[in-house]
Length: 386
Image (cartoon, rainbow, N blue to C red):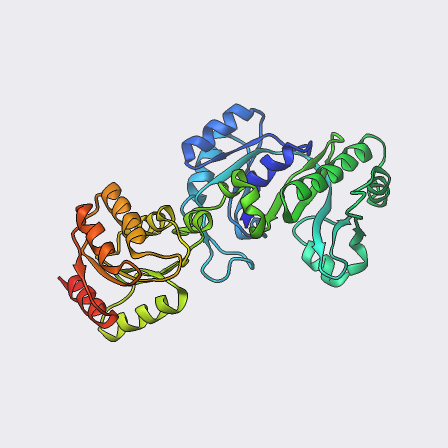
C-alpha cells in the first residue's frame, strides 16, 4: 500500500524527522489558507499523486505570493499528471501539499527497504540526492551506500553516525541526520513498511537538515495491525478501501450489470454468460466463501454505489460455511440502507437456498428469482435494456 507524501510526512514526524512547515489542500481556497497559516514569502505547491518525478511533469512549483498559491493549486487540481511511474494515462490530482520554500544548499538521499538477498532492512544513502537518483544508481552504483541492519540490534547510533559522516556532514548537521536515520528505521519497523524514502534530504543555507520529500509503502499483509494507516489508503479508485477492509476482490468494468458472486471462478463464469446473453458486466466481484453478513453487505453497497449499474445479478452457491440465508440478510440490510431501487436478479443454490429467498422477501426486498445461471443472466440483461 502506497501513501501520499503528506501522509508519509505525518507518520515520520511522529518519529522526530524534521520537516518544512506545510499542509494538505483539496481546493484552491484551502491551499490559499494553508499558505497564509504558514506565513513567509515563498511556498512550494506539490501535486499529491502516488508516483515520483512530479517536478519534471509540472507537479511541483515554487511561488512567491499567496494569490499565486491559489492560482497554482487551481491549475493542478483535477488535472492528470503523467510521469514515468504513472504510465501513459497519468494520475489525477485530487489534492496538493503546500509547503514553505527553503533555500537549499545540498540534496542528499536516504532510503530503507528489505534486501531480498539478506532478508534484512537495508539503509541506503547517497551524497547525490534529488530527482536524478535513479540515474545515479544506474550509472554510478558505487555512490549508493548500503548498510544491512541486524534485526536483533536495530540501527545503532554508531552505525548511523558512520553513514552520516560518509555523506560529508558534521557537527549539528550530522546530529540531525543521525536522528533522522534512526527515526526512519523506527518508523519502518513500527509500521511494517516495505519502503521508507527521503529524497531529497536537504541541508539549507541556514544549516538546517530537513526531509523535503518523503515516500512510504506499507506491507499489505500487515495492514490488519495498522487500521489507522489503512484508513490513509487512497480511495480514488472505487472500492479500494472497502475491499481492503472486508477481504473481497472488486474491479470496476464498463458495463451496467452489477455482479455479486461468491468465488472467483464462478464470478468469471457469470461475466462470460452475461456477455453471451448480450449484456455487459459492470464489475468483477468475488466475495469469499467465508464472508460474514457484514462483508456481504459491504460488497453489495459497493456494487450499488456505482451509478452506472442499472441492474444487479446475485449468483451465490451456498455450501460449507456459506449459507444463502446469511447472504440474503447482508443483501437485504444493504439494500434497505441505501434505498436505491434497481432491479435485482437473484440466483441462490445450495445450502438454505429457499430460506435465502424467503429472507429477502421478509425484509421487503423486491427481486426476480432465477433457477440457474443462464436464466439469471438472461433476466438481468433484459432488465438492463428497459
